[in-house]
Image (tube, rainbow, N blue to C red; front, side, top):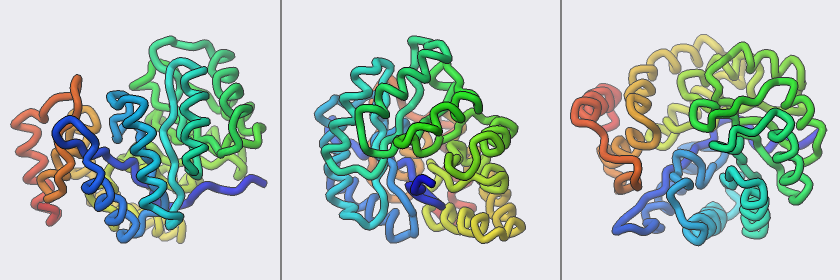
Length: 294
């Protein structure tokens, strides 16, 4: 049986920017805050970390800094996906050399690969590295969708360690877990489905909400893993207004605005993502105030 990269609460951590560059001192404080808050894994340079608008040099420097700052306290999982298989492979090898514990590899976007093409894409990368790979299925962003049968085929590879599932379909999650079994962990990629996915047998979450409220997400996942589903459901239900506000505009625009409101200088998103609209920002502020977060 394969080792599980992590169970519980993983944070899809934001990348702080200042004056056009990565703000490493601020990033270090965010990392420490997550670990102090009980977070079980740091996922760096993913969607929420704005890897798509970072240069290759920035991306690898940010991954290297995260590995060094974490210093083995929790697993570090680096986003290394690309829509060019060779680029994704090179990213994975570079991150592996930096000492990450896992690789998060999104389905190749824009090209609209066939189902067979997706399998070949992941197998080429997995054959090239020794670091465990978490597949990342987010069809709303990529235009392609992976299926339980594809997961079952990829789960046979020794370097494929599970999937961050953000398809929004809990029936698919259930079918995946039934088909692939315990050797293929599923992590929730949508904060509004954290408890449902864990209740179906998911192993944890890769959370945007955790940037703002790491203790809350840890309490939620810990309750699920202890099979205290009434408490987990209560926490999920009580945080839905906050989750809705954090996804009222495209991620990571609201979470970066929320972090700034909470006193963490993460700066704005890079273009083409812009400022949060005034009405959405005011609603976010009110919701955060009700939760005691600003």
